[in-house]
Length: 162
Length: 453
Image (tube, rainbow over all chains, first blue to last red; front, side, top):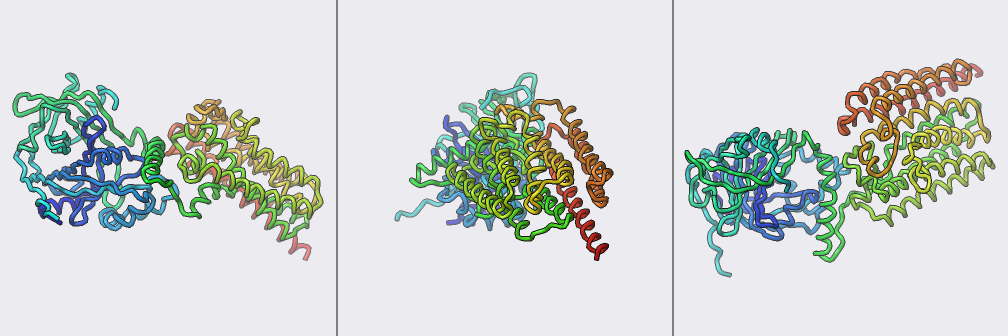
């Protein structure tokens, strides 16, 4: 169910890079700049198996956060947001499953991906990928990006009992 | 994560802001962007304090500070990618600031480690991840490529030009002498292609087993092997089966040609060719490991291929074919020679003592220029003594490319990826000279038809 504030959804829609923070084996935070995609409910990120330590970390501890903080990556928007949530790694078929799940969203943000995909033979492992599906649970939003002021906080509505 | 270094502070200072992350009391990561300044002398970073119950940078636990220049260029990907993250703790300071004392750092800067090298260095992580995933899911999960691309990559199909040139020239020399059999010509081309692809695959098998390919973290489309086994795109058993099939195809066609021509000379040439191809990387000779790879390739893709194709047509050897094979041999050996330059560190680590491993850059580039000049001089000399047709002189036209390659090698010797266009030009040099020699022979043959009606 979609609950993120509209301003934050807009940031997600524009962001070409966001910062995914995962929890490492020693309990330390580790941050990875990645392109965030948004399907109207969940945040979708993805990772090559080449750079899959973050996937191992998520499988061990699925709590993550996604920060949207760079005005250049946000195509001029100066607002900032951080979304906390629980992630799931989708990896049944790293060769092609990601294409079915996220290629269309990725292509909308980065049309150049099609030309990279044509070079799959040159970098075959780069295109063996897993999808990181993040269910947002809490959102902090800073209008104008001023983090010296307390953020506006929103939480996911409590799930109804089945 | 390596310990913090002094240069990390200088690097961090180049970013416009940082993202600070920690694990909150609920066990979730929390991130907030803030301004900062670096005091490299004191090995400290001043962070501007942030506000809010959830977003205040804590001073009672480890934090992560990230500077990132993963900056998108819409429609073009990314440029100047780099990021740096530091781990440590923060303590309250004056003026609403926090003092951050990092102890560990980790990052990537593509100006120091190009993306392709970064990816190559990460191959073991990919293998480990997929092995673990296979175990978790109870089935084998491996990288894949479509059959066509897999065959192209496994056999290094585009390098077949190295075979096409000498084989077609051998046939052309025979045709100039008045002998041409289309079916034998076709069989020769196909058989030679099978042999070349089989040798490519066997070289890959031995280079992977010896560790040479794994030690090479800067492969390019022209060097570093197919990496099919390293990437786990095929198993060793599958690759050996493919190699055996290619060798069997080459042997079968070779035997048909020997039978058709009844030529012991052809049988000898074929055996020498296959022997050279195997001995190139296979033990016990491992010629390329001893600095003899260029000579093996020169012989195999020069005289062996060209004279072999000539013998198929005529049943005999000739001085014209032998002389014509020399420039082709030199230029094909120079393809290998130049392609070995970016492989130097990996080859050296694997005990592969190629000429670029053994010799200084000045000597290697000097030898390149001398050898290329010799190739063109042989064409001129061959024409001067009347062995080669005058029209073969058209093959001198691409000579400036050799000079371009020489210049590129001098400028970019230590930059594997920047060398890629230079390697491509060097391959074109061999192909263009071969094509123009064919054109020269074609013109000569046509002129002969017209003259003698």
